[in-house]
Image 1: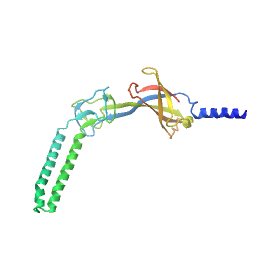
Image 2: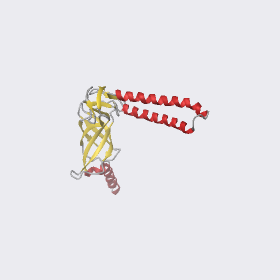
Image 3: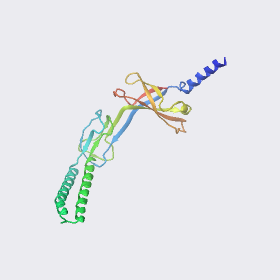
Image 4: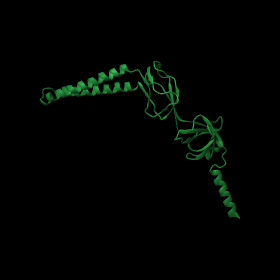
Length: 237
């Protein structure tokens, strides 16, 4: 009799420990990343290569600024590097014949190094005139147009939809019942009713004193990009 009671208590404890008593929680499905793109340097837009709703890949060009001056600077710097190298070749034989000093040879080598560094610098400045996507995602906002001035204010926003994330606000009494790595069922009703499995990736360890709650983030795989973001859902552990 005692053995049977012990087994019953054991299973009840295990059920409680695994979070079986957790109620459903309302959540919001959001993009994994939402990136606002502005320009590192102020300038005039030459072209914007994407529209709202377009899918983009990491590294893809989103927009270009006018860069005629920067391209000219690259050409000048490249010409200086090539001239310095030709000068070095011409003077190499003179050095071997001891017609120029080691000091003169060192000056020539330094001249090449400085020219190459300047070339790198102007190429970097030119690269800043091109805005590239840092994620795979969809364009959700596009404000700029060719001829407009851009700077610190963003003019393109890209959302990464794989994976999606779900943010929950959970009462503090359930803090010990939800762990990183735990799975849960996600019930979505938009655009169609469907159920999916998500995994807990973040459990906040600093509680909100005003509401006695803590945050939980789940990750939901969306490889075929069929699930939308910005919709409400219900999460059941």
